Length: 110
Image (cartoon, rainbow, N blue to C red; front, side, top):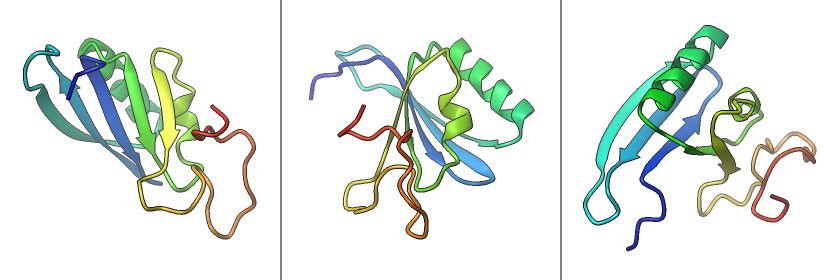
């Protein structure tokens, strides 16, 4: 598979923490992998953003089934996308017991 990006992060967004995986490397070789967690307090999110910038990350993909992705997506230093895991029939950012949020980016409206 051809690498399209060389410095990327995947974020699994939870209410109280983020699980982050960073892939960095040349397109011709296996990327280096680093995983870490971050709490969702403002100061911790800012530290996480600084760490990702220092690692050279430019693109961030987030998976979230709630609205918890919104403060993270507001970080203007990265190209960010919110998505839904394959096999999940819910819209990105939409809880089953809530109405759809028109601000939620999905593959259909992003």
